[in-house]
Image (cartoon, rainbow, N blue to C red; front, side):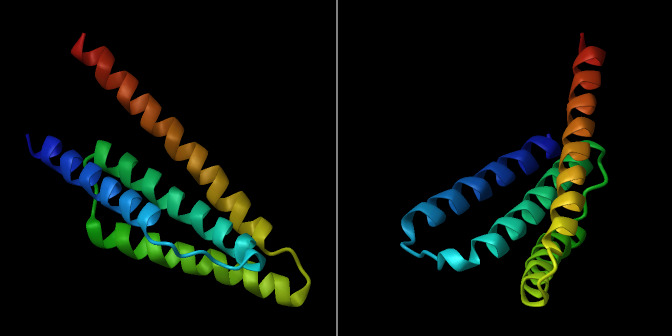
Length: 120
């Protein structure tokens, strides 16, 4: 029952974030698109890691929040620094967070399939 309540609050949070994102008429300069896209990739990695840890019953909100914002800021900073130095450092963030994103997704998929198999 506690797990269903957590999932409910997570879905409510996602809906509130999506509504706020669609209603606020804030746009950013297209010259920042590289930094924003790398930061979004880092945020998605944190979300998938949070889903995985929730399924494994090891979710910690402090670790999730610090990873969510810390990874996004670090990824955007690496992209910015690389842009200023003329070295494509954003590839490091893309490779790291991209591979972790797929790894977390695979673990989520396996966890859900094994739980479904156990219930049948």
